[in-house]
Amino acid sequence: MKIVTWNINGVRARIENLLHWLAESAPDIVCLQEIKSVDEQFPRLEIEALGYHVETHGQKGFNGVAILSKLRFDEVNRGLPGDDLDEQARFIEGVFSTDGGVLRVVSLYLPNGNPTGTEKFSYKLGWMKRLEIWAGERLALEEPLVLAGDYNVIIEPADARFPENWTGDALFQPETRQAFRRLANLGFTEALRSVSEAPGVYTFWDYQAGAWQKNNGIRIDHLMLSPEAADLLSSASVEKHVRAWEKPSDHVPTVINLGLAAA
Image (tube, rainbow, N blue to C red):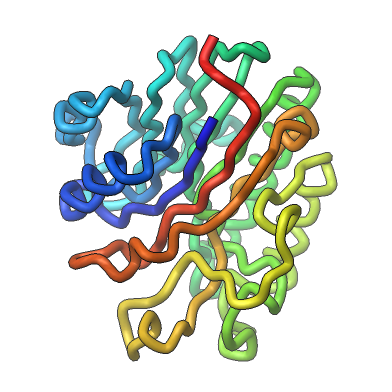
């Protein structure tokens, strides 16, 4: 089963790229972030025509997450618990039946947090703490669980071409990285680094200053796997070529394959 996370950076602006990529890559489950669309305006008909079921948690103009799946949804949950006042659309969970039992997949878009020293950074850390609490509760179910998304976290210096350029950024602050490690230490496996320590693997290149052409990238899109999901992992990779397409997102798809099939 091929599961992918991709920050699409505006689904309606990138719909042609998305449809082309879905036909080319043929993923089973796709977690999209920054759809920047309310649910009613999401281009579901075009995607459904390719054989996908679509669930969204949208928001006008920014944020927004979605899950596209060739498997039927058994259950859908929207919004990260823990703060009833948080209206930002950053979290959607899908539950599916597979030949190995229940599979849970989350598309999440963590806050950027910049500038540091402001309420935006506090919101980022608070959101990560809520995710840690929620994930710990889900782990108790002992089911394959995939937390896929744009984490807005540069985990290690090796995950940036020039880590020194990010020392003042919320994505690379010690508090941010510590929060990510606390999540990992619950028992999650970070998929890509579990199969490869290859240098120069990035998932985001800014539109400015020729970042893509110079390979001045960072890796901030991650798939975190519960022990039950990690046991099924057969491969993980980045589909970098998508960044070279016309009118691209500044992120590219990050891919895992699990030893599961539809029930």
